[in-house]
Length: 155
Image (cartoon, rainbow, N blue to C red; front, side, top):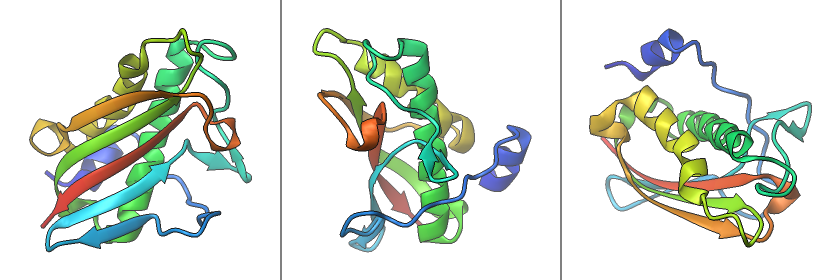
């Protein structure tokens, strides 16, 4: 399966990326076949995040799911930028999601389904199914609702 054909079929366009604001690299290969991707936030337009807010206070579960899917789009764009071709992804190994939420909010896994669902849609179950953790956070940079980091195996 060609990932770019699948993106076109799903009517998805990779977003533009902004340079990192910190002293880190967005993706770092290690070993022969693994690439670790730093935490990414939602898509940006005109220098502003498309999704903001604390889940359970400012925004609801559905908004959090949409924000997580948007983070997935950012990650796909970052993977494309770092790998040169999304078809080099052999397997998504591990996803770690942080949800900016109130202490009472306990549906972090449901929020992260927005991200995981996108990876399954784009890559299919053989490549896109992954191990995952979903963690509640008291705050995230820029008040974004979701941040995700990921480990992938490449060919």
